[in-house]
Length: 148
Image (tube, rainbow, N blue to C red; front, side):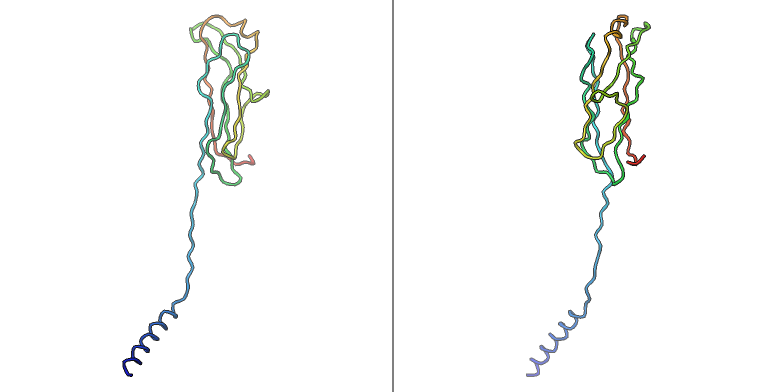
C-alpha cells in the first residue's frame, strides 16, 4: 500500500507541476519589401512614310507596393529622329497613349498596361533628307507617393 501511495503522490506532484505552467503568447511578424517589375517597349523601326506604328506597351508584370505609393513611368525624349549620317535633318514624332501624347503614367497593380504608338505626320516625312534616323527614348521608372 505504501508503494501505491508513493506512486500516486508522485503522479499528483508531476501533474501539479504541469498545471502550474502558465500560458504565454508570442507574435509572429513578417515584412514584405516593396518590389515591382515593369516592362517597356523594345527598340523599334519605323518604316519610311508610315504615319502611325505600334510602339509596344508599358506593362506592370509584378507589383507589391505599399498603400499610398505607386509606380511612375515617365518618358524622356526630345521626340526628334536625328539624321545619323552626319547630314542635317530631323523628323519630329509623337509617342501616344491612345490619342494623347504620353509623358508619364502611374500604376498600382500587376497587369496594368499602357499601349503606345508612334506618329509622324506626312509633311515631316516629305521634308526629311535621305539617311538613317534615330532617337533615344528613356523610360524612367520610379516608386513614388501616390498623392504627389
